[in-house]
Length: 179
Image (cartoon, rainbow, N blue to C red; front, side):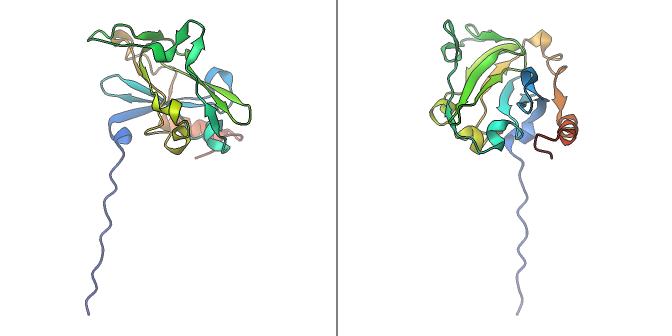
């Protein structure tokens, strides 16, 4: 009696892995392990996400709220972008706060832009379901979309680490997750 051999299905890489180059910012604003990942598309668009070593993803914390009200006069949700020139977009610096995450244990973490450019949008579905940041941090759990200025697009990665370099840095650190 002949047996049929099942062939393994080819693994298709995620959209983010196929079309984005991943850049990393370790210890944002000098805070240990508060690392961010910035996937960059070939069209210059950057997305801000949390890395696997971020304390919110490591310690099983529960995110209570994610307000985008940066100050009394600045809310990332008030960002209304329109037209080809992206009128109305808020300009961000490398350390500009995008939002703040408050956890049920009282801890608070600020998510920064890490790139200079215009804020295209802060993803509103994370405000209603913050757990998606922990469940799918590199796909649906992204925090914001930024568009660097055209003339600065080549230089935005100067302060960022490649994936290989980031993994080397993580191996050297004891208090963060290693790869």
